[in-house]
Length: 251
Ligand code: F6R
Figure (cartoon, rainbow, N blue to C red):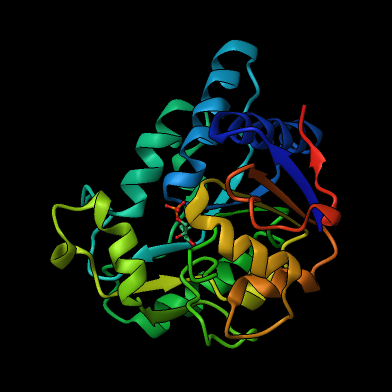
């Protein structure tokens, strides 16, 4: 794993955006795997800024998001679809019909998971997957204990994940209890992975990821099995990692 240390959230976001922009420019038809949440918001702001100032185009880009809450329609203000529209898609020249998220209101979730897997396959696979990490080590919404063999599936969100995401909702009880998520196997099949982490609350997870063993009890540890993972994390998120592990400093 290539580890790059950023000073703070802003620098992490700038470095992450630079990484993504480079890949989009190298391959204008790139398939991006995208994430929601607080971690990538700054990166998305930087992508938008770059698009407006320097014209990086997303006209041919396809995107496939990691997950969506069960029970929220794409129009629901707290759906991940709305998050992506507001924080990224509405501000780029990407074609909306080329942007995909699972349907949280599907009438048959088993079929919906199959549809999503086929969609990933037909896209030719994800070229670059952007990830955040949960405090409990989840990636996508693959909670601890999820088999590394999973494809898209429905999950029961843990109490800790619901609490962490309650800040986006009116209160804890409005946070959905289930989600549809891309599986760990699909994430691992991405050609490149860019993992971001910021803040002290992520330090323990990052320490476990870098120092720890590969274990289904800690989903992110599966990333140690992939040969092209870049972690960009700020000092706070790296604060528990041994200095000897040698993170490169971002510029
Ligand atoms: C979001 C996702 C989650 C988040 C994780 C961290 O699509 O799949 O795994 O990346 O919960 O969330 P934040 O960035 O809000 O700390």
